Length: 127
Image 1 (tube, one colour):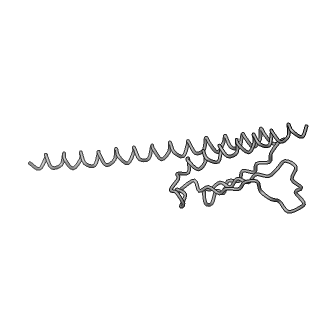
Image 2 (cartoon, rainbow, N blue to C red; image 1 turned 60 degrees about the horizontal axis):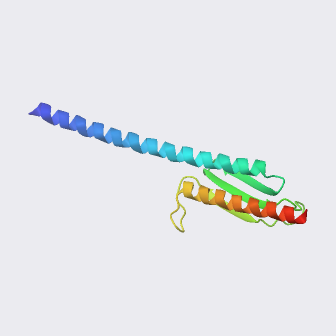
Image 3 (cartoon, rainbow, N blue to C red; image 1 turned 135 degrees about the vertical axis):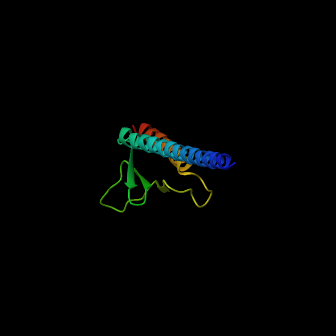
């Protein structure tokens, strides 16, 4: 009888370990997805520097991302008015609507694509 109890205890421990491993793997996947989107945002900033200035700052001590967008014609010695600015915590959901960090990053990427398109249209009109 005692041997059956030991097997049940071992089976429970194995199930708990498997659940912990699954949770850990899911957390790593979500972090990797966030990192991929951050890299795409950096790529957008670098590829479109001639039409819009996108500043991407990662704060390691709080694991967050700040993105500021300025017009390409901004006078950096004068007061800078951001076209768009957002702070995203990569470790917690947004307070207002419980959006995950990945959702927030994807929203930001869409907004940047919109701003880039507007800046390119503005540049074409000026030419």
